[in-house]
Every structure is written in structure tokens, then in C-alpha cells.
Length: 259
Image 1: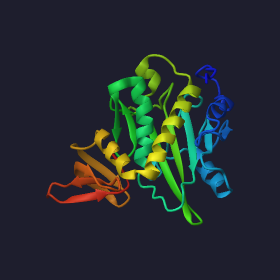
Image 2: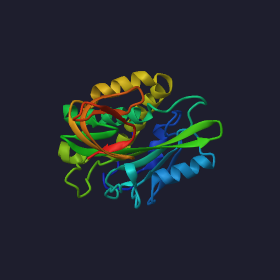
Image 3: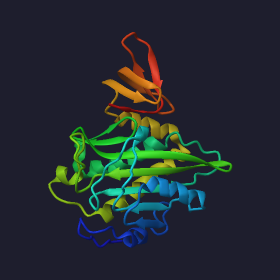
């Protein structure tokens, strides 16, 4: 269906998004907040109170956003897409392929806009011309006999935060983008990859591995246990980055950030 495209700087028309995603797994329920501390925190609270699988929490102004390792996530109000998706996978499904799935989904949509200038950086950053255009934060919760997950995505669309390492899609294309159609595309792509991550996780990790720009490079990784330095030689079946140190030993990094 067609979606009316509001001005890029107007508040999001969340009703148009929910209408376009009616009947789909992700986005048929949309909760919009003009301003919120963190869409991930709100989504996790909603999951604990029974929010349906696929519920999307979206805001135009996130005042306390977080990235990996507790870092602050900064976004310009009414300029990008800041949203979290509530997931209740079937019981017994492992979720180790969910971070690669989210990166692939965003990467596909961004690649359609900027073509080969889009690359993926371990674990799930999306870059354009080497600058970060999107960050992803995935958090898991135990909900009875199964895990629930929140996929938080922050995409710089029409403005980038004042960081030398960041960019936005408008800067790459030379023109602002309407955000509602973009979010609808992102939810469709994410739904496809989440389904694959739940059913064929090994295939998702292989596809993500093939698209990682990190492998073969010298890296410094700030992990939960300290700094790891060496050459990123591969990823394992769980998505951990394998880093070969100068002494020839190889260590898996399961969670961290390349600095």
C-alpha cells in the first residue's frame, strides 16, 4: 500500500506505520512516544507486562539512549529512526543469530539507498563510507520457559550527532528522506531475518560473516573483560569474533566494541 510521506522533520506518523504493517509479525502494534528515556527500557517493561510479539516502540526524542557496554547513544530529535522491537520467539529457540540478523536487515535497506558504500562492522554496526550510520542494541530477558528479546535500532536518517565517526543517510544521498516508508522497509527486512535466525541460525551467521568488513583487519576490541588486540581472523558459530594476537594465540570475543 502507499504511505503518505510527511515532511522529514515532522513527528512520525505512527498510525501509517501500523496500518502498513497490519497482518505482519513486526509492527502490527506500534507504541509511539514523543519523548522517552530509552525505547529499549520501555520495550522490556512492556514485555514483562504482556506486550505482544512484534510490538514496536518508537520515539522522536530519546533522552537516555544506551549503546553497547553502557555507552551513551546520541540522536538528533525528529531526524532519525529510534525504535525497539519486542520479540517472543517460540520456546526452545536459541537467539545467538539475532544480532547478525538485525545487522543484515538494516544493512540490506541502507545498501539499497547508498549501494556499495555500506559495510557491516562486528558485532552489528552499519557503516557508510566508514562512518557509523546505525547502532543496534539487543537485550535478552527470561520470560518463564523461554527467552524474550528486545531489538533496539538507532538509524541516523536526516541528521547525524556531532561525532566525527558518525554520518546520516541524508548526508550520503544529498537529500532528506521520509522516515515512515523507511521504517516500514526496515520492519519488513527485520521480520524476514528474525524468522531466519529462529529457524536457520547457522545460515544467517554465515551470510553475516561474508559481509563483515572487520575480518582480516588489525583491531582493538573493548570487551567485557578488557582490551583485546590483534587481527580479526574469523567469527565462530556463535558469532564471537576470533582475534589472533601477536604471539599467535587466538581468542574469542563474545561481546565488545571495536575501538
